[in-house]
Length: 445
Ligand code: NDP
Ligand code: 2IT
Image (cartoon, rainbow, N blue to C red):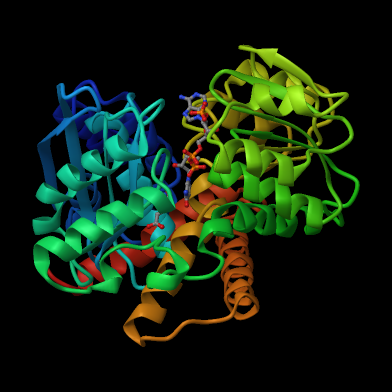
């Protein structure tokens, strides 16, 4: 890392102790930014990096609620409003027991650059709670969401901060959150949340957008080597919103998708994953992948273990951060891996990224490859602002153009900085330059 940047990075780490994921995300971005600061020393003068690493506002709050047995439960809620240079803070809410400030900050920090890459007018933010939705009834989920919004509502708004979903937060939760926001504020403010239901202000394609976008981005990377998804053997981690829609899109491009996972284990289905059955088990019944294996002949289920033990030519990590480590990366590469498209945020450890890059595997980092979700959220905001709703075809066409545009911007930025094919560098510099320009123009804020 450039010595000037390393000094700033060390100060950031010292100011934010114990936040390992945030440190990792900051370090990875700083490693790309030396050459930009050589060309633009005025950015150092204006302390752009120091400002970028300090969120504009951080909110931490108590979320009290009662479970079905009448017991009082207490969780912690977060919203980190990181950067508003390009637009209102925008980013998802994660409900998972592992959530703490370091996770919310890594996600919010990544979101700044991701959102800039989309070309849409959105700043970066993220939020969530250490609430564990697993095994909770609908009524418990609703009471939790209502309590969460009873504090959050005063910090958000269509011109201020626009949350959406992430792990553990999908259409059901956005519905309960929106209902409570409307009730407290007495405003039907469609643009305050994205990922809404289609009959009450949502956008077609938003549920599919992240997974679809990841596959479109990966297809663009494959094209640069004269390849496509046709005939690739694909392994996907996770079996949530992003994973399921990535599987569906890869199959529509004639890939053979043979494995996916949840936090209990993974399935191998050599005949190709049956997306209809997967949706039934995971989305309708909210069940476990094991149930899928019990209902379809020829499927093996491995309890525990890592889905990255399954050979693939294309890997799409779509579960969570640091799920794919250096050893798994080396094994995949030895067995014929060609490309990795990150549907999740920071799923590959820094060691894994180094293995992919050193071995010439096409590697699309999350902040570029999974930007289709938030980009389509911005399309939802656009439809809300004009009180319009677009067709599936039109919206998917916009998503495709945006993903191809992100791919091309990352590739051309990598070329410009003398590292062709380095999508990490391209994404970090491409996103950073846009935000830095806006921050310089807006004065010391
Ligand atoms: P979901 O809650 O729909 O699905 C998450 C999936 O990942 C589930 O299969 C879950 O398994 C698995 N998973 C979660 N945490 C762990 C863990 N600690 N260990 C192993 N498996 C785990 O979330 P999404 O699909 O929305 O999100 C997946 C990833 O994509 C996240 O990194 C998210 O930040 C990122 N992302 C999401 C976007 C969106 O629009 N939703 C946009 C861009 C990125 P189980 O069911 O057992 O919990
Ligand atoms: O990580 C992400 O980009 C998301 N969870 C989606 C955010 C959004 O505002 O749609």
